[in-house]
Length: 258
Image (tube, rainbow, N blue to C red; front, side):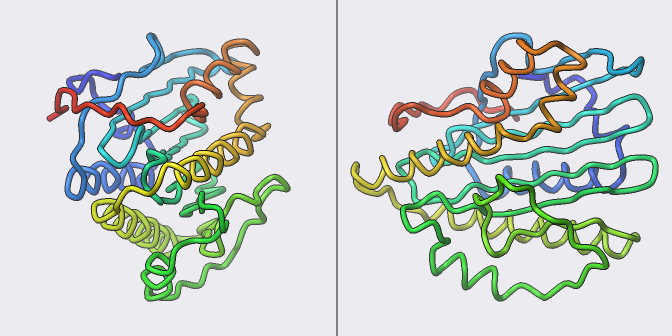
């Protein structure tokens, strides 16, 4: 895990990424009981080269009683590309969806911004409480909606995938993604563990989510060019979308990061 004393990469990134990263960390601190999560050795902070440009990746990971891993990744490629990637992986004891959001920013502005609460339960839909809370959010119109990739059957009906065209739309995305996160954290804090039988079903839902996300060829190609195919495969499967093999019932609170 990246040492808290090391300057965060977000200070150098696109303002929308900087602001969303701040909101993610602040929400985690405000609503959840955070403790440290250890990444595989050498993967907290990584540097490489991509087509002659310096590539830097910073990973921050935490855990809570409800989440086995909460991952915030920031990446910067020279002065050409800034990336934010965030996923919250629930423990299978809790009937929670997968919160995920990504922003890709280039010299021409934000090319893609996505936020969702992806169902993991046997019904493949969000619970009524999530649907009620998400439906109550203010409706936001964006100039350009992005099309989801063919493998993206994991996302919910509330998935927000856009290309913001101006500062106002960037703010709208920031507020909407923050609202998704706030709703999720509040629901998680009140969540009650399910039966062992249901845990297996929620685990299967999370495994399916990770398997689908590993099919993101754009991410894999960038990592392969910078670090090689073997490293990229390890990073995809052990950091970005590691798949649990069995329900994790061994949570122990570790050292607080603040």
